[in-house]
Image (cartoon, rainbow, N blue to C red; front, side, top):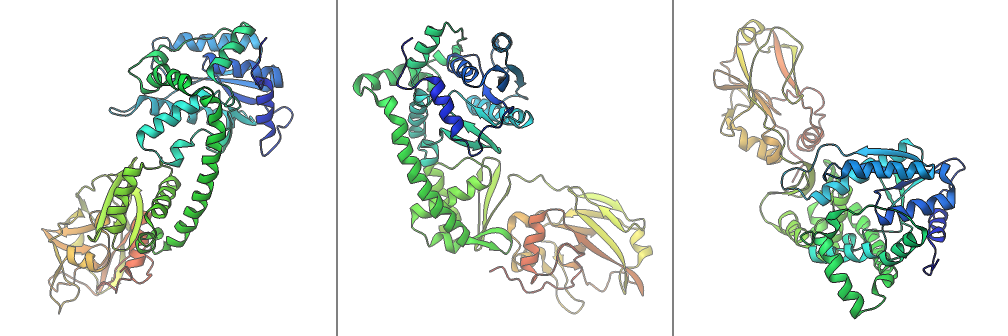
Length: 480
């Protein structure tokens, strides 16, 4: 049988040797097995190298095509004929409306494969990416304006969700794999979507790659070496980005970044640091266009606050601090409550109101008789810090305290007959008309959201916001 410059067995053996931990006797190699040409060659090669008992074939059933059940049956039959262990992993749900089907399928596939690999105690997960895949991915990444992350996304040895990933076939192109499978008499399935010209990857495969091969013979097989050089450059950029990001990190609040430190960097370094920040959040790296917008709004804009959406997260700036939280926090409802003497009332969202004995506090009998409206107060609602001082709007008070706009709407207030009785984070309104008693009750608050607690610690001179907040006047904020 004609062989390419390196046999499949040699490439698989070399990939296993490249693992940080040598494969322990008895631990299998998990193989992502779709039943197509590429994974069929990989599965048979793994069996030849390790033996059937040390190979686990994993097939992901996406449920997207009418032939999916037949493909799973073919995969199971092939694994049975080889004598390998086999598992079918069904993708949960489906892509949301407007989402990329290809991206959804890739994400759920990797998640399922990595989870099954861990559960089986396998030494690594091997996938059948080859040189043509590298070229297709590179061209699609260039079309999207991707940076080094997108251009070097497929590495021979990688790690995902704590699982070592091996791609031993990158030195072979599709033609070599087809010759290998045909000479060995292997049977495989064809996914019709791979020939659909309306799909960008299929269009690149059937229209662009043939023209490239004709104009530049050998380009596909030379690509892995070129990408290794790009990957070396990415390593250097990533290291500098980690240093810049570390220099910008602050503990007020924890996990935040100092805008000025990032804004002082040259644009390429600022982009690299922002890209590293987003990757550290578990999101895909932003495109160059998105990075430019992040620089403009988060680092350079003169407004006191900004927010950008990126893959289910909000990247926020308030004054000189950047941070990230979940996008579109649910609206906090206003609820009507009656206090019956409990020590704690739990609010929607998990915040807790505390009711504790306090000398000169609110009259308990009066408080029991009231209907308390608890939830966000209008920004124009007023709160009095002391009996002899005028009332102020909550908007102004929270702004002066350095509470970011994104968090202000989450701060609860207790209203009685349309008036603010108590407001987070300041405490009880001190209008003298509220009924008090020598042995009264004070209202306190414990926010459930860690970011809210962290920002209040910054705003109120390091006072612990995890205990009840009853300060009659706002303390001087540290957030500038």
